[in-house]
Image 1: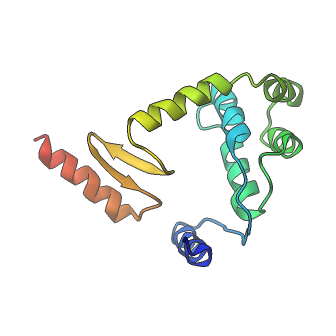
Image 2: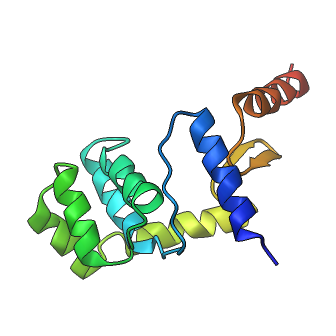
Length: 144
């Protein structure tokens, strides 16, 4: 069985090292709709501010990002058109695109986020810079 308190303590420690704020949420919520909105937001601007708003809502405030009204609030806060956002949510416009992303991940053996992959090598979970640098270095040495 997973020790949730330990996982959260590790997550908070990693966030603190990276200068990220982290709340004390006790629930996990389904992020599927937020992923769909995130893909829509990226059509407006790559790495759209919506992603940071969703991160803060989930990890700092402990908000249930599975609820459309929460997502609509985040859409407004991120400067996206709320009417278009409501249509995206109601029609599940990006559902197929998220399904495709999930399928691609499954085929690549990616089962957790974040996962960093270079060729056949991968690093799972939030990692310090040094671990990512070693991954890149191993890949560079293999291919030189």
